[in-house]
Amino acid sequence: MDKQTITRDFIDIQDHICRELELGDENGSFHEDKWVRAEGGGGRTRIFKNGKIIEKGGVAFSAVEGPTPEKILKKLNLEKADFYATGVSIVIHPVSPMVPIIHMNIRYFEMSNGVNWFGGGIDLTPHYVEISDAKYFHQEVKKTCDAFNPDYYPRFKKWADDYFFIKHRNETRGIGGIFFDRLVSNDPSEMNNIFEFVKSIGYLFPKVYRHFMAKNSALPYSETEKKWQSLRRGRYVEFNLVWDAGTKFGLDTNGRTESILMSMPPVANWEYMHEPEEGSREAQTLEYLKKDIDWVSL
Amino acid sequence: MDKQTITRDFIDIQDHICRELELGDENGSFHEDKWVRAEGGGGRTRIFKNGKIIEKGGVAFSAVEGPTPEKILKKLNLEKADFYATGVSIVIHPVSPMVPIIHMNIRYFEMSNGVNWFGGGIDLTPHYVEISDAKYFHQEVKKTCDAFNPDYYPRFKKWADDYFFIKHRNETRGIGGIFFDRLVSNDPSEMNNIFEFVKSIGYLFPKVYRHFMAKNSALPYSETEKKWQSLRRGRYVEFNLVWDAGTKFGLDTNGRTESILMSMPPVANWEYMHEPEEGSREAQTLEYLKKDIDWVSL
Image 1 (cartoon, rainbow over the protein chains, first blue to last red):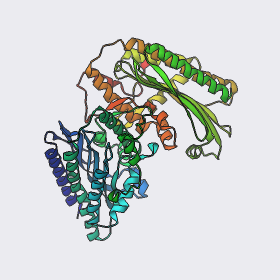
Image 2: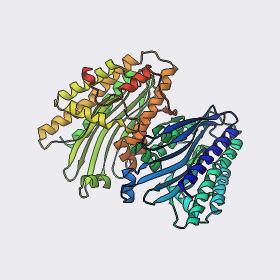
Image 3: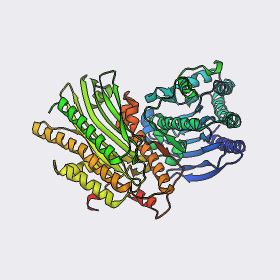
Image 4: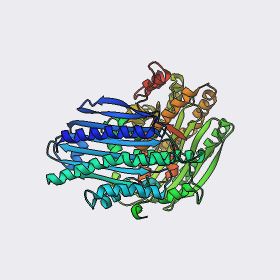
């Protein structure tokens, strides 16, 4: 397992995901934007256009290298070193408010001093929380985790609850999923197990999302649901710009702004003191935007 | 000059501004939302509704008190102390893309240990930069500053350029204005001069904004300009959520979220890699979103 293998496998995952999403949408397609990073490396950002089900979506691959940013070195208390980082990152904003927003990321980071790790996660942000959908999603994620390590799902599920939390609203971004970082082992076979796990998350993504695309895009909705979707997208913006450590780090260290902000919804709304009617489906959804819900056995 | 006087004068300024904006709009009116802070104090947030010229606007007054947040004490390297803070804060998002977004804030802060200061600012974010408008705005601001101290305008204009800067876009939020913080003097007559200056900024706001409301809302525009307005509102969101120190501090210290995010536009758009056509008015506007432009004598 070396960085070339990881990079190649990540590229395959990007290709696979893009094919799957195009098949699922039946109308739109990805447009590729290749870019080069002045300090070393580059990427291929793919943006979905003319979607029937996907309104705005990006599937980004990048592999960048060069001197490690000062902020990372300082945080890790390390001397100057070069780094190599590669990853696949996805956010999909669907047309229909009945289809959830989804985010997936897998990444690998290594430095010339030998420090290296994997990170990643997958999490779901339904505009309307449906218990059966949430259960399906968490069961699929758990199954993928359990195939590699029985500790993964409980640890990484909690990590996601804590990470995808909009502190100033006291609500989670969505129903969570898993989040993990700095996953590493000195044992080469265990490190390979981690790599296989990370790839499985990449392959799980199109499977679960095509399920939601097919099933939920067939559901009816009206202006009420569209309006609520727009307000929820506002919350998505708030999380990503105020609390997401990855976004903040990227914007603060001269990352590629257009790739980082690919996660922004096409349109978002804000309304002062908006409160859904008691007992409404919108109010019910807010009840479920909490940490520590055991979705798998709910 | 004591905190009661300052508070009363700030309340008068909020009242004056609300009356002026209602007169200028001719259709909409402010709805007041009184709130109480659990730890001490409260405020009256006024939100503009049904505006003909103003699409979303808030004029907030607050006067809060209690134990000084740890983050402030640590930053100032001070022991435990109580604080009192009062201010008026405004953001207006107009219906027409030809009318600029405006922001104004005046504030006073004091602690039981004797530390105190004024802060504030006023800045303009036109969707389309018009030289004559920018010049008018900066001249009015300079005139107000010069009446109190010839150093104010150059110092605070630069401060605004540096403060209202969207680092990850390498562009200023708008055409700036003035920004100042921790303005204080041991000389009581000078401190009173500062207080009068701060109030003048409060009274300047409705004067300049009514000028733009009357003049610019009469200008024609089409879907092209509306679309651009929506993208520029996206940048406004980016600045406020990623870089605005006041917003970040408020959201991080359990401030009143709905008052802090009153600054959000009603709707905002994001488009991947949007670039205006060369030579277009949109492209020209981007050329002017730079620091250190001498608007007064341009």
